[in-house]
Image (cartoon, rainbow, N blue to C red; front, top):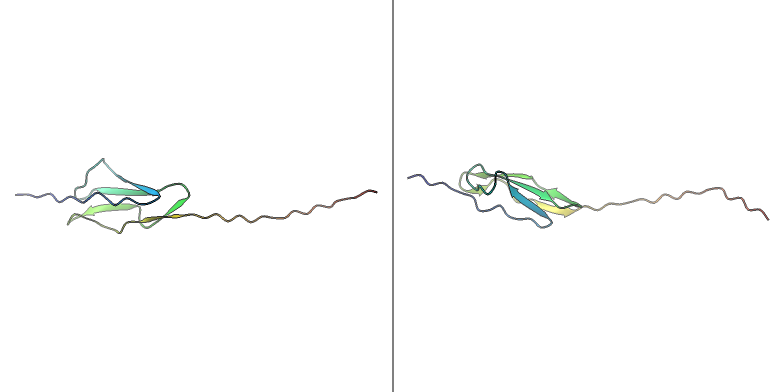
Amino acid sequence: MLYLEVCEPPPSITNGMVTLQGGSNLSFGAVATYKCNNNFSLDGDYLHTCENGALWDLSTPTCNRMYFWYTAKSVFTDIEVKV
């Protein structure tokens, strides 16, 4: 008798999403793709594969907020005052 091992659905991530390539297939070789929302950066691998033993091959990534630092430049102009 042949038993097909399937992975549990891949873990979801905060501030992002996970999709299964090819629909809802969770059998050996299934691929999950992780992506973060706008203004968040993925920390970890974005592609994960269902391995033999019904386990995902890598640890779940996280989405970290990206911070943007802006530097203000002062622009001085010559001012002429007439009295």
